[in-house]
Amino acid sequence: MNDNTAAIKEINELLGDRERKAYVRSFGCQLNVSDGEKIKGLLKKMGYVFTEDEHEADLIILNTCAVRESAEDRVFGIVGSMKKLKELRPSLIIGIAGCMTAQSHIAEKIKKSYPQVDIVLGTSAINALPKLLLEALHGARFSADISEYDDFSEAAEQVRDSSFKASVPIMFGCNNFCTYCIVPYVRGRERSRLAEDIIEEVRGLAASGYKEIMLLGQNVNSYGKDLENGMSFPQLLRELDSIEGDFIIRFMSSHPKDASNELIDTIFECEKVAKHLHLPVQSGSSDVLRRMNRHYDIEKYLGIVDYIYSRDPDFSLTTDLIVGFPDESDEEFRETLELIKKVRYDNIYSFIYSKRSGTKAAEMPDSISDEEKGQRMRELLSVQRVVSSEHYKRFIGKTMRVLVDGVSKKKQGYLTGKSNEFIIVEFEGESSLIGQFVDVEITDAMNWAVSGRIKKGQ
Ligand code: SAM
Ligand code: SF4
Ligand code: F3S
Image (cartoon, rainbow, N blue to C red; front, side):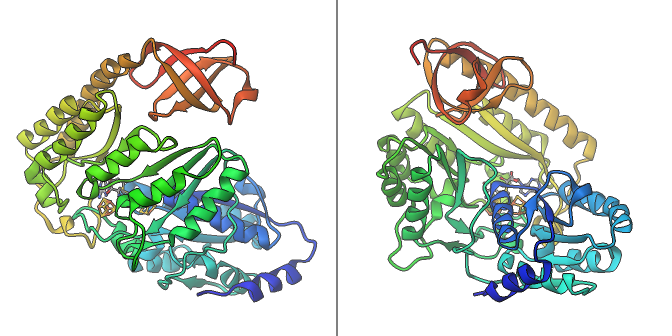
């Protein structure tokens, strides 16, 4: 446990009434964004206010992602450009947090080649931020804590980016070691939070009017397996479903190896649980899945999909896919295209394979050229566009309950929101509806969204 009360008090005394602005930017997945909100919670305790403009910040924290090389390159580019900011304002403090810092070669590179960086904060060391910040304020050239702590910053107040959508991490880390993935190395082993803490947090959020609760974990449906006498994930869902209030419960990401019929039955039974499942498949080829160490084959995956569709043929499924895994043959890639057509996903999140040093796949021979990988990605996206524009037509003539997210960037006077099924919905309406549920009659389907009009009488 990292007690930071003394350091927080000392910073408040040191800076007194002086105005202090912080710019916090998170990259990567929603778990990382949630960590960014915890970092903001700590900074708020130290008297910081937040700015979206790094030029006026006294403190910059980049909360990084390491999942693909491009994500890391982007951060290095931003840190490089911040050298100028530091020259203009030497009192500026720059900190790097998040998954990149957990790789020792990256932490070394930052220390050696980016002297503008003052603080390096490991993924489980968020509570050490006040101590490191205090050292930097006292003039230390470089302060770092990349140790692995197992407390969850339960007490950390979050400064949430939205007033109606909240993410709630229910577990941290990953045990799966998919051969391409860096996450188990930078986030450690699976640690589930206690069910009572999660239930209390969700109850508080519902009472303060939050309309969407997103439960997060790298392998969210293995929740509780590491706890002695812990609740299973379906049990937790049922408990959360019984909390009073008008809100929707979502969760991600579910691993197919833990997607039991009980989980699926629970989704159908629980009124507040969204009728949507994000079920990352990664590849349509059982051979590739074996080389990826995914612990299921396509037959097992399709068995889950069949069970879902046997209960509701219109159920909404989305997935993650990797194109160009080492030595992926043309035939194996075509199996992925076939799978997309068979499952009829509403949306896919697809990535070109990125070699991550330290993972097993980084040692595998790879004869596929970058051009070929790019070509496969384009083909995959064009197949998906056809699938989703066809599949979205099933909503025409139906009424969807939509949580209004914001105004449309494309059409003036229009709003956008997400339906229970996690489909983007566009419709005409007043911005005062943002943050509320509305019923929308669907009249049209595109390949990325559906559109319609608000039901009369609302
Ligand atoms: N834990 C989740 C799961 O297993 O589905 C996903 C977590 S990961 C942060 C999100 C997605 O990034 C993965 O589903 C995978 O498709 C993609 N990904 C992970 N490592 C990758 C790599 N080395 N190259 C390309 N995509 C990768
Ligand atoms: Fe990475 Fe696999 Fe864990 Fe997901 S399940 S975080 S892809 S190792
Ligand atoms: Fe990236 Fe770390 Fe998430 S590597 S995807 S920010 S867990």
